[in-house]
Length: 107
Image 1: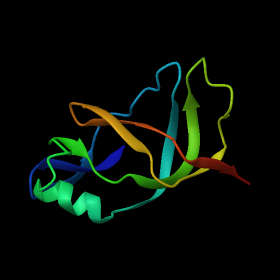
Image 2: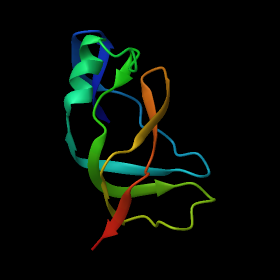
Image 3: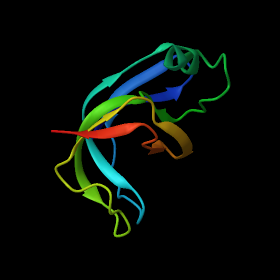
Image 4: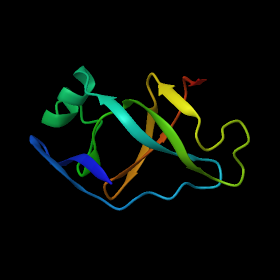
């Protein structure tokens, strides 16, 4: 997949990264649109200390569910999601893990 990666403070690179695999309680979303907001700008320059490079930037996204874990029952593949503000839980390497805290299926 393509991602905007903060490789170090003030250095963003648009590049290919490995496709993530959803855990048993996660969904995988093919992002169709993603916004960059003020907190991303502060993350880019390191002024808040909340984003530690390397990390995939952008957290206001919409897209389609293209995969899901075995324990996911609320969502199904093909559902369209509008995620207002997922909460970043952790970063492993450059993979961001997010929970959809305020999303709804749209048809």
